[in-house]
Length: 230
Image: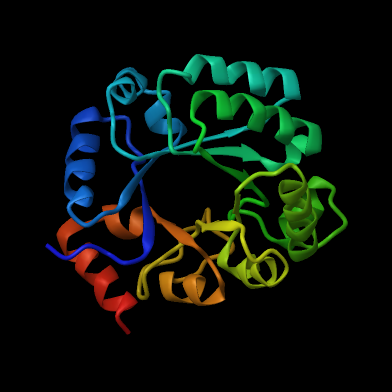
């Protein structure tokens, strides 16, 4: 069974452990990496499952609080040893540094990704929140903080991947908001890209959720393969 030659994460967004296991078992055949977000991690059996999960995975907690709180919170997951972890860039430089320091105690090879502006937001949304800068400018500012804090990765949409890659050659760029061609644009995603457009823009890896999990997973995996081979 041929595996993908690109780094691709699959968002296991379910609180149903049985369903999650089926997804994980299937995607592992293709070398796809499971990404566990808050829905799974907060579920009754989700955290317990991860205690004994030994394969590579991302724990997408998007930590966001004061430095002391987010670094202390990592003590609660020290037994999980995720390969990838996320923290909001908006916690600031000191928060990013504190998070990194504690995360490395859990796993010395962990890839910490600073999350920039969520793909559900656009320039209008940012203005409503109170930001004056546009998305692209804010993401570049946050990329600068992420780099300064010594993090290995950044989470940003494909729309900003190109400018990040141009300025920061070695950052691991993880791109969410990914849809396969022909999929309907969901209301909660404002900045959307296809896998190919994200990789061409400079992404190191992409995250797919509903594009793969909505409908027949086997058929959707084939759609993804066909798309990447174009």
